[in-house]
Image (cartoon, rainbow, N blue to C red; front, side, top):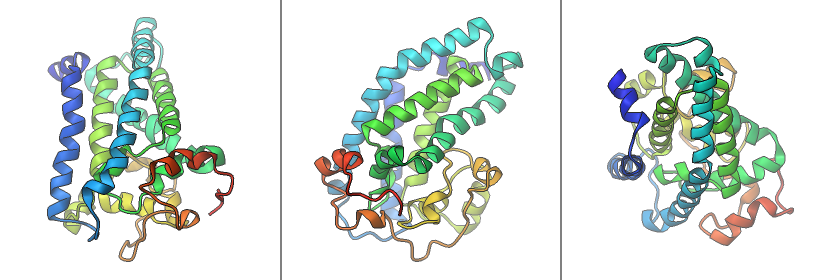
Amino acid sequence: MEKLALYFEHIPSSHRALILAGGITLFWLIESAVPLTAFAYNKWKHAWINFFFTFTTIIINFGFALLIVYTSDWCVREGFGIVQWLQAPLWLALLVGLPLLDLIGAYLVHLIEHKIKWMWKFHMVHHSDLHVDTTTANRHHPGESVFRAIFTLLAVGVTGAPIWLVMLYQSLSVVLSQFNHANIKLPAAIDKVLRLVIVTPAMHRVHHHFKRPETDSNYGNIFTFWDRLFGTYHSGGTQHLQYGLDVLAGRGDENLKEQLLLPFDRTIKTDY
């Protein structure tokens, strides 16, 4: 446990980049072999706009990195936050801190984005993808990337997570998001077991259905128990699922200019 904490406390930037690129590459290859949905599309043409938004997300996260590190160091130094109040050993910090970081930094902000109309318009860019695959994981409008960075900062402050735990959380968050967006078909038995703890592709794809109420469900990123606890879990079938949003019908999901301006387009209905 100490070796794990030490590694993530000093994780090199090159290793973090490898986690990002390696995850996309791995799931890209797997989904080509065992696709969950048989898309008739050009994977490279589809991916380029998602890679653009991945790049903007990296830039924004880099801008918030110093604030996150400072907040974590301050919490440890001042004994502030849930993990610090518990005076938790490493194993307890992991068991308590990791799920709470996921709750605030991923589930909560995701839920709020679906409930507050002006935030939802930024999040629409993520839902506008008509061919959800592993590259969709980082398809976030720069405005949404700011929302998520702020909530990550809030999560670190509330939990009092030491920097090793923050880095571990962010690494897991990246990989699990790539996994649960991947167009991968898992054997039903394996999917059933995995989703007891973590979000699977079959579970998350319901969230990308083009109509409510399916869209307003399965908000989780790493763990499934937040959806179960707060009543947003949807286990319904996905046999005839259609991706995208009905209010964006006819708009280009691969048109970069249109996607960047989408949150400011007053002609788009926010009630769908």
